Image 1 (cartoon, helix red, strand yellow):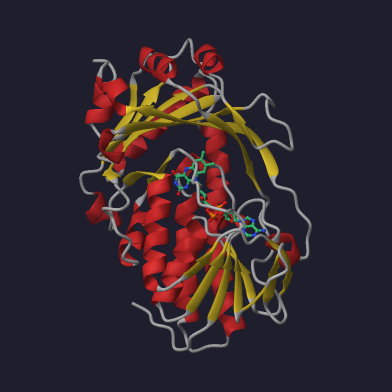
Image 2 (cartoon, helix red, strand yellow):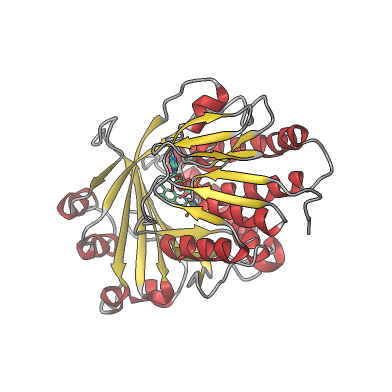
Length: 389
Ligand code: FAD
């Protein structure tokens, strides 16, 4: 356990999962944290989120209320062929706490966000809404919001997400997030609907993560809130159905049923049970050359500096790792600029590697049926057998 040898006034811009986790970790360590967010109120996407062990371990360490998070624990990971529902691999998480030090949780994003907000407020973090930052001064650190208020700090943390305005100002390089060509459909189905169908009931009763893998698309499904809902993320080639300007559009159930009409019966049934849902254009960003401002008084964190495809359930997890490392480097008795350089040196290679792996998975998970797919499935099965969790 670290504890800061000095107390800094920190301003975090963005109260998403990354900003809140950072606020909580740093306030607990003796710093004084203010978080400002553009949104008038917090409304996390109506969707689930997976919390793998590198993420759950940190939430436990920071004392986040696990009851408040209404978590389910994934018992295994089941990978299935799109066409006939046959198993590619089935990996029980019997010893996940022994092998990875923490469990693999499944939660509603709103519950995770609320639990983090709650913990941050209890720790003494000041959280202000309706404060959209429009300009920064990174030398005499301050951020000015749309209503003309200026917030001064010893250190500014830009946690303002993939569309960050902090990022181009801090790096000095204008950038545009890259359209990956994939889209995500985020779907929630009431658990009782699955329980009423003998072919689907096991998906609620057995809290596991299931992936259906097929050409141009894969679906990841898991129960959340103790089976109250079944969450599905469909990740698929977009065929350019959203424009550059529009990132989120309403999904259409008939289009979903049509697209997956030839998939195995469970998928077809799940599509038929789907009500309203949203489609998200999936973007990422080429690797940045720096995350810290030369003044040594401002730094980026989370999706603002390493947005990634969601294929490894690591976006928020990497933001949490950022928070943990930032806390640790700031606890040292060294100059703040040197500490931030260390943060960048530790975090940049790791987050870049995970980003690269998610891009690899965009290809691996969506290959057409044939030899390459058969080789992939064999390799996945072998990896799962050789690396029990
Ligand atoms: P954000 O959540 O984007 O928060 C940024 C905040 O900054 C927002 O609240 C915004 O209002 C605020 N803001 C923006 N501009 C300004 C401004 N100018 N002034 C003030 N405030 C501002 N990750 C996982 O770990 N596991 C998963 O299972 C998983 N599944 C995913 C599934 C999908 C379909 C997608 C798209 C992502 C998934 N992720 C997952 C990734 C994860 O959601 C993100 O990586 C994470 O939410 C990023 O958090 P953040 O705080 O960095 O950014």
